[in-house]
Length: 227
Ligand code: DX5
Ligand code: ZN
Image: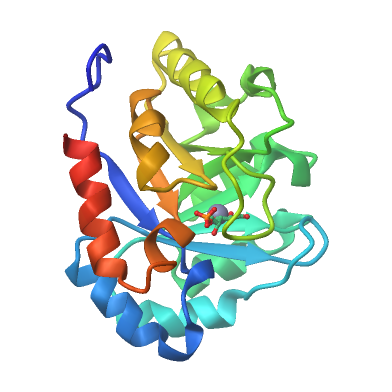
């Protein structure tokens, strides 16, 4: 990636199962693993923090034996501190909570890490990066939302690119090793822009599944990242 100091860093693609057909999920997960997905992104929604409901720890525990891919578990739920233990036991490798959903983010991030799990913090589009000022050193994964969370297939909010670039600068300036992940509305046509802004891990839902050929979409995404 021209002009970026970490340009040669390998980009990770995290397909979001929110857009997959759950009646055929075992086959889909096998396809994604063979095709070289880096993580499986699992969107947990409670109908309160976001206006949609998906699945809880039982489903994630059932999926766990199907794959060795890391489970990137994105909790879009209120009071996530009540449930992180359940998601850890279900087999999550990363647990990401929303800054907006918890009062004691610093305590929660450390609670997650004490369970031996990588701790992610996500910011909604309306939440500025300055909230990270005093907790950045507690964050293993910084998840920038490029849509308002709740649904797959939404349009990428254009200002997100500037925010991703600012987050990249912040992490570099602070010497943070946190992984910068971006979630929402990323497709083949804007993937390059997101990567050039400094994102390391890209969540893709509709971008992987909408065309009905997830392996092909993943291969194309990889090609865009390594161009
Ligand atoms: C949105 C979820 C996303 C979603 C992304 O609330 O957090 O992970 O599945 O889907 P696309 O890529 O379709 O925007
Ligand atoms: Zn997500």
